[in-house]
Image (cartoon, rainbow, N blue to C red; front, side, top):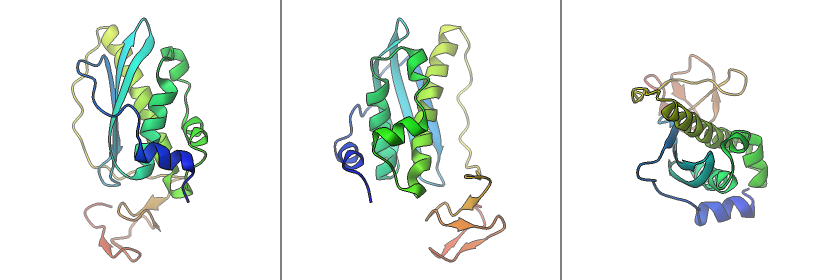
Length: 170
C-alpha cells in the first residue's frame, strides 16, 4: 500500500525534465531492475537554484525522484549532501519494503550530481561512464530476481515466481 504522499508525487511529479547546461549531473540505476534516475543541478554560490530529474522506473522511483528534488531545491550543497535515503522515505511517509531501494537511488543520484558539480568546479573531468548491466547484491548480500524482485539463490538460472530465465541476467 502506498501513502497519499507517494501517490501524489507519482501522479504529479515535481521538477521533471532536464536542465540544459547543468553544472552537476548524477545518474544511478540498474537497467536490469528497470530503475534509472538522472538528477540535473543548477548551482550558483553553492546553492541549488534549480534541480530536475528524468527517471525511467516504477511509481516509487518517480515519487522518490520528485521528493528528493523538492527536498534539495534551495539548499546549500553541504545541507543537500546530508539528505539520506531514510529522509526521503520518511518524507514520502514510507515505502513498501520491496521498494526501499528506490529511496537509495534518489539520494545516490543527488550525491553524485553534487560530486560532479564539485569536480567540474575543481577542473576535474571524467570520461562518461560506460553503462554495464552488473549483477548487484542487496540487503546483506541477498540476490533478487531483476524482473519481479523475489529473493533467489545466487546460482539460480530460472525464477519460479515470474517464470523468467535468469541465465544471462543473474
